[in-house]
Structure formats: C-alpha cells, structure tokens
Image 1 (cartoon, rainbow, N blue to C red):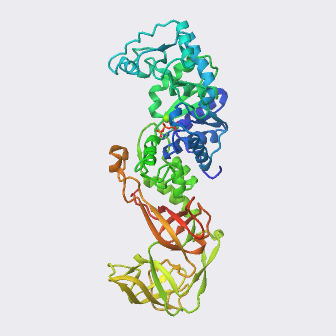
Image 2: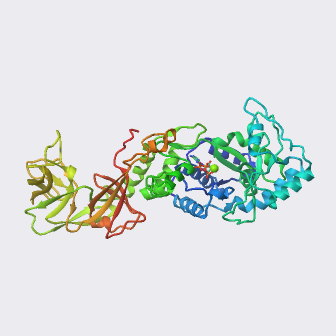
Image 3: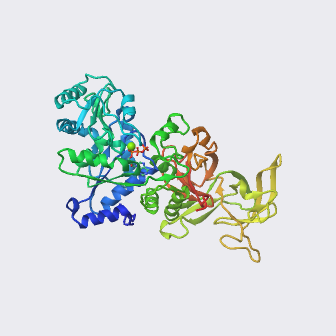
Length: 547
Ligand code: ATP
Ligand code: MG
C-alpha cells in the first residue's frame, strides 16, 4: 500500500516514536488487530485496522491478525473469512495470522501456574452469587467460601473441569486478587468457564474456555506484541492485563494503550446489533450497501483509499466524540472525483424524439474533465433519446434552466435542442418532440445563450439498467438510542429502472463512475452484468450533511 499517507501524528504515534528512541522493547514495534469472529467488520473496526497496520508500516514494525475466538457459540468460519477478505481489501497485509484458540494449551498451563502460586482458585458458587458477592462501586465484595481452597484441591478441580467432569456454569476458575479492590475487575475475576460446545477450530477438544481478560494479554505476550492498542472501554481492565502478565512466567510483557472508539452518526458500530439487522432481514445481508460494515461500504462503492483517508482525518484521541457521516462521504467524494470516469445515465427516463436529426451521429466525449489520461469514448446520438423527467417541466418553477415547451437546452456533449411538442397522458408528459439545431455541435448558437445543459442516453444503444439508490439506513443520528423499529428509515432504498450508455453497461462489477449531474455509482459486485446492468449509488455529488 503506497497511496495513503500514514504519517499524521497522534498521541499513540508520538508515544511509540518515544519508546523507539528510548530503546524500549529493543526499539521494536509489534501491533495486532484482534477481532472476535462473531460478525463482519464495521466502520469502527477500520479505525483500529488503520491505526494498528498504519503504525507497523510507519515504524517498520509488524502487525498480526489475531482472531479472538474464545466464544465458540457465536463464532464461525464464515466470519473469519469475511474479516480476512475485508482487511486485505482495505489494503493491509498482516505479518502473522493467529487464533487465540491456538494458545488454549499454553493458556491452560498459565492458569495452572497461577493455581500453583496460590493466585487462582476454582469457585463453585452460582453465577448469581458470584455477581452479588462482587459488591458494588461503594461496597467491597465478599470473599467466596471457596477462596481458601488448597493448591492441590484447586489443581485437581481445574483438571476435572478440563476433563469434562462439570456441567456448564457449575464451577469457574477465578484469579485470587482482592475482593476489596476499588477496581471491580480486580475482585477475583473469572478466568475460565465450562462450556460444553463445539469450537470451529478446536472441535470438541476443550470444554473449558478462557475469558477475554485472561486470553488477550497472554496472546499479546506470546506474539511479542509491544503496543496493544484497544478502545477506551478496556481502560479499567488495564490493571488486570498487567497483573496477569506480571504473575506468570512469560518473558515478554506487552503494554496496553487505549483510544476512543469511532462513533459514526447514522450508523451502528456493534457487531451484535448489526447481526440483528441481518437476522431479522431488515437488510439483505452483511454486505447490504446500507450496512456500515466494510463489506457493505465496499458494495456501496466506497474505495478503500477513501476509508483510509477518513480514518486518517478523524485522528486518534482519548476523547469519545461523534463523527458526522458527511465526513466519511467527503473522503469518498474526494477519492472518486479523481478516479471515477464520467458516464451518462438516466434514472427516470422521458423519451425525446429528435425530429430532424436524420441519421445517427457519433460524438467523442472525454472520460474525465481534468484527466486526459483517462481517454475518450464515442457516444451515439440517434433520433430517439432519454432525458430525465426532472429535466423537463410543463409548468416550470422560477429560474428553471432546463427544458420547457418552446424552450431550448443543450444536450451534454452534443446539440442544442428545442422542444416543439409535448405528448401527455392525463396531464403527465410521456414524450417530447424536439428539433435539433444542427449548427450547435460543441458551440453555442449565434446571438443566443443557452444556459441549461442536461444529460441524456441514446435510446437505440442505451442499455436498460437497474439503479439502486441507497439512503441512510437510520433516521436517527444515534440509532442505538431508540427502539430498532423506530430507528429504521423506511425509504432507505429506492430502485429506478433507467438507462445507461453502453460504456457504463460494459463495465466489470465494482467499476466506479460519476454519472454526470447525478452522483457517483458503482456496478454492483454481485448482480451487475453487461446485458443487465445494476448500479448502486455510492454518494451524491454534493454534501447533504452540511459539514
Ligand atoms: P463489536 O461490539 O462490534 O463486536 P468489539 O470491540 O467487541 O466490537 P472486536 O472484534 O473485539 O469487536 O474488535 C476488534 C478490535 O477493533 C478491538 O481492538 C476493538 O477495540 C476495535 N474496535 C471495535 N469497535 C471499534 C470502534 N467503534 N472504533 C474503534 N475501534 C474499534
Ligand atoms: Mg470484543
């Protein structure tokens, strides 16, 4: 990846530069991106991905992809594959691919080490009792009656847990730290629980599974991660992260640093909530273009460079803040303005007969107004074309610059036409008869100024196309605040049966265009075919969020 700047500064990059200068961790930098494979990646994850991989790139370090797969009930290979595809699509390549489940053996041994040191015990209290006895922020917790079990007893109970002698929830392994600690996470946190479930990688080998807090720090240390970057909700747990690494005989000690989550307006950044949208068929799948998932953004036509640019612009801080969707769209528009070839498409067609054109003509059009390297294409103009219904008005509002009965307008790249006759059906225009001023190809008629320019598609060569306009999925800036049904925007998808010029129809899936005067569109990743084109709206030409 070479086209994105990754050198913008933030408090984490400053800290790492300092650590390298001081020779900490031998001057080495190792990061990781640690998703749980329980859903598809969303826009929030892209912030973490760009940060972790960007730092490795900037400092000549490494970044691993590690699946935090300790909750087998919710995880699957489908999610693992989707996550890998999405990270690569974003333009990053991990150094090593790991799975927390690959460390189950080592994690088990470290748990035994804590038991042997008198720092962990098997608790047979019920889950409810454990919760109640943890106390509150104002009251200390109550020690479990099992807290003083002997090392031997704990060892044999833990071995029995592993051997499947207990039912789910019957016992847990807890660290023995401090039931009176002002930090709740230090009140003898649970390290292992019993779950008789099949794991997508380890099969039925294990019926005990380690908890996140125990797994994460040790996985980091096993991989030699120097800077373990995570979101602010883990800040309180840092003491536990450090406690576990300090109390086991692992040579490397990783360090955790927290940053603010990305909260994007009109989007949800929780895999669990996004899964509900998929499961309840509110959207067509994880890659529905309305979804704030990486797969959804891809299908909507957001270029990976735009997403990286967005992450760079929003920066990394320790303060939670909402980011406007307009900011993401700004980056998308910036990227596409340069890279997308121009084409013509008509979404709501109105047929126009060019009464005096005679034989069809061929017109050369450049593919990009500012980039001659993008070349030219030839368009055919014949005696029947389509224009947008909205570009004609029977009763024009004030200052209407487009076509009216008896008025003139320029067809983009072609002639000035005059509307001589309107055919209506129940008062609605269904066809126009226009005459062409044959003297006006590429120049204005003498003595007359024709202000309006409209786009068009030739009816003979144009291809009928489905054009999907995706709007916001939610009508609430913070959709999590209200009930899901209330938050959903019922008009988030509008489908047009329009026409596109042949050079748009012929494109391969995922090709991006600016449809002139309309917006940026992408040939749908799955459904687009040259003979049955399908385009998705990526973003309009102008900002609608007022940023
Ligand atoms: P979710 O609630 O969507 O499952 P998560 O934090 O539980 O989010 P993980 O798969 O565990 O999801 O996340 C992998 C990494 O991505 C973690 O380091 C996490 O901190 C980071 N991450 C998740 N959501 C965001 C976000 N909104 N902004 C920045 N980083 C995030
Ligand atoms: Mg998580």
